Amino acid sequence: ITGLPFRHVGEHFQRLNDMISRYFHMILTTLATQPFYMDYIRFPAGDTVPSKIQNNPKFWPYFRNAIGAIDRSHIHASPPAYVRSNYRNRK
Image 1 (spheres, rainbow, N blue to C red):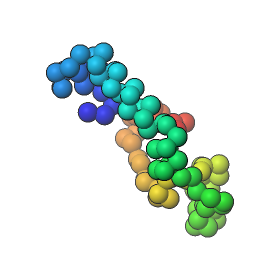
Image 2: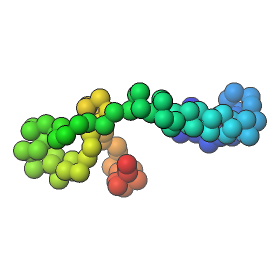
Image 3: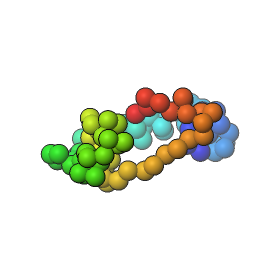
Image 4: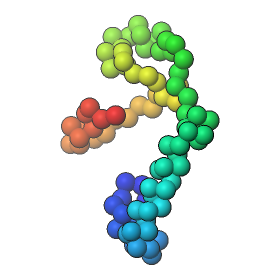
């Protein structure tokens, strides 16, 4: 159900859009609060870019200012050519 508008989610769960929106914001607020954020979100400490990426000119220009994934993993994504422009410069 991710990526769908509130009305689609509301139809799926048979709830009003207002209720879906209210609970979405409650969950978002909970995830952004200090106790949860400090316990479960950790940024990499220091220079954690592997030398395999730093020494490879194919990867380094794209990862130079990256802070890294939370679990220090990289997932290769290759969208189809006709939608590639939609995924450029995305966070």
